[in-house]
Length: 496
Image (cartoon, rainbow, N blue to C red; front, side, top):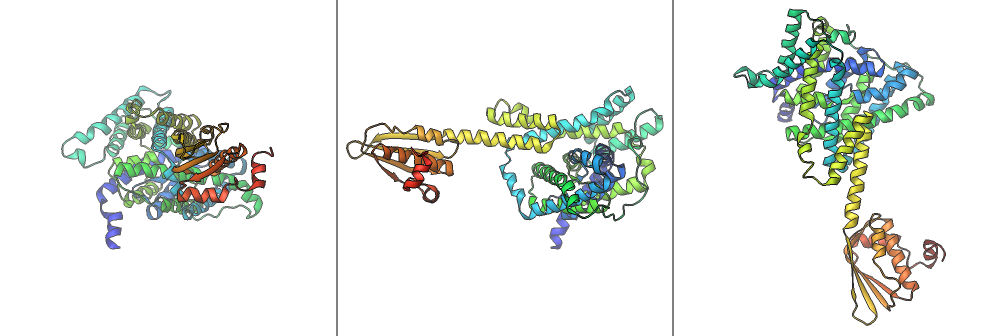
């Protein structure tokens, strides 16, 4: 137990501490920005980010992953806040947490195995584009100083690691923030700083039960929002966990992560914060800066609160150009550049799934919608591909005026018409044997197709024998087939 805890928390203390500080600095402007998007006070986003980060460090299933207030979640809150106010948002946040805990116990994270690699790649690329697009307001209609500072920040981030001795000691994003802040203080140039984003809180968060009536009317108001928040939050968290798994070549407990996200959102709601989830951008910053263990997430949350409450005067002086440079680095590092090269090598269907996921996610700014479209397209392409792998051969039987149909492949809703079309019902034969030893029947549609084939042959006066059904197919055919039930036959064939 001690060794496991030591590995999870203290085996990378230096890297986790430095990366946690970098993440905390990068979280501040984003938490403020997401609060503004949702239409609430900046304190709501900052307190939420602190609470979620700290709680998920203990309760989450993926070490080194950063969770906090996010833009995807903030977009879903706008209407609720506008129509009903902050208290209903806090209540919706609590219900979101409860729904996510239930999802964890129902093991809904196991459904991630149905998300193809093409969808994950499209999701990653879309997020990289959205992260970059989110920086554009800070680079539009500004003076040349902002461009110079941003370029200098990118130079520091990418070149500092090559310096001998010190290059490997400090994470370059942290160096970027410190150097550009020093330059800003020394020159006094007219550029936006973190302080311009909104007022930072000057006190610690307190326990806050939502001031809403506990009745069915309240539930009817918050439940639709909570359900959307729970789904989008878990979807983004599961996707981010998958990406961090790949970056670190380790595995994670995604059902535990579902429960952890739920507990974290309940904690955020009780401290006056909004709902949040895993953040791919901050998680990549954490990993790239050397963070690997739970300690990095804990330090990020604690340092975030300490900075905005006790070091607000200093933090407010950080130029936004420095944080923009860090986020541009994140978008460049997040984007799967190999996916562009692989467009020539991968099947057209995989490319369409990936590009559709990117297009829908970027076009709607809705991560759940993008993934839904990607998964749907992937399923349709797969069903079509497998449905085409069906062959029905015909040969003469052992006796005169007989035929043997040998079915090879998968019979289900996508291939049932192909299966039915393979039989010649008008041929004058006395007996037909349908050899199913190399076929598999998957669903009701397949069983109905078999029923129709048998019934049509019998109506032509042909004897039909089914042979070779494997155990699984025989189970579904015996349970649902009706070709030996006269009344069911009439109903199936439309009464004629």
